[in-house]
Image 1 (spheres, helix red, strand yellow):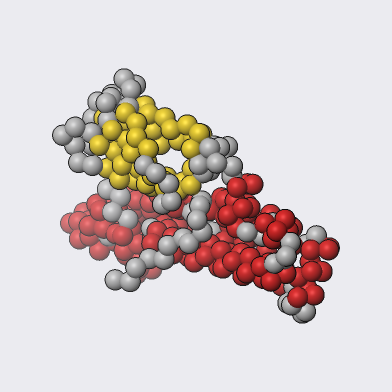
Image 2: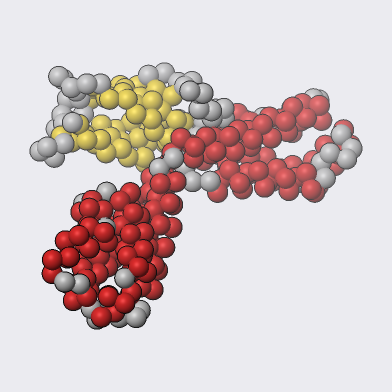
Length: 315
C-alpha cells in the first residue's frame, strides 16, 4: 500500500495560508513587484500571481479531516431519515398487498416485495435499503392491477421511486465521505503545491534582494511565519474522562511535542485537565499515559491566538 503524502510546510495549515497570503500581498507592492520583474522579465505577471492565489484558494477550500468527519456525520443523520421513509413505504405496500391478494399469498408476496431487505434496512443496514427499494419498484410495476384493487393510490409508485432516488443519492455521498484517506491526500497535495509556490518565491527573492537584507526577510518563509504566529502565542488544554463512568481521569501523564520542538510534560489534575500555555503554534504529537491503560497517541494542530482544547475519552 503506497504511503500517504505528508504536509511539508513547517507549521500548521492555518499558518501556511496566512504566510502565503502575506507573501503574495508583499509581492504586489509596486516597487517590489518591479524588482522581481526586472530580475526575471515576463515571469511575475498578473496572471502568474493570480495562479499563486488560486492555488492557495483551492487548498484552503478543501475540507480538512475534522470537516470531513462533520460532513460524514451530517450525511449519516440525513440518511437515517431517508431510510425511514423507504421502510415506511414497505409497510404501506404490505397494506396494499393484504387487500389486493388472497391471504394465503401474503407471506410469499411480502418476501417478493423485499421483506428480508426490509428487516435489514430498519436496523440501519443501509446497503439493504437500495435492494429493498429496487424490489418494491419492480413489485409495483409487476402487480399494478392487483395493488390498485388493493386501494393503492396512483401516486404511491411515484413516491416510492422518488424516495428511492433520494436515498441512493445520499447513500452514495455518505459512502464517498468515508474515504478519509483520499480526502486527506487531496488536501495535503494541495497544501504542498502552496508550499512549493512559496519556496519558489523565496528562492527568487534571494536573487532579487541578495544585497537588501530587509526586503529579503519579507520573503523568507520562517521569518514571515514569525510575524503571523509569534512564538509562545498559542495554548493547548486537554480534558480526560473515563468512558463508562464519565468521571475525570486524574494523574495521567501528558507529553506533547512538535516536529521541531522539545517535549513538554504535564499531569492531569483532579478535574482530569492539563494545560500547556504560551507554546509555539505548530502541529503537536500528543502522548497520553494512564496507569494500567494502553498508551494513546494523537495529533493536534494548535494555531496562534487560539486556546485549543482536546477532550479525550479513556476506554
